Image (cartoon, rainbow, N blue to C red; front, side, top):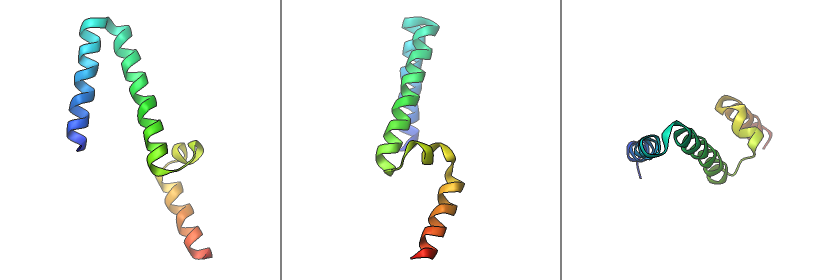
Length: 70
């Protein structure tokens, strides 16, 4: 699935939640979607939570140092 389609589906889900459930349901769906995104990325990348939140630049720099040691 490409990113545009995923964005479309997420937007539609948030729209339906906001329309039928109100603003509280909209926030709940958005928060659970964010949690699902983070957990999915962690499982796909095989990294820890600290590495995920440290940012890409730190991971790239750390990977470069690891390669130099080998």
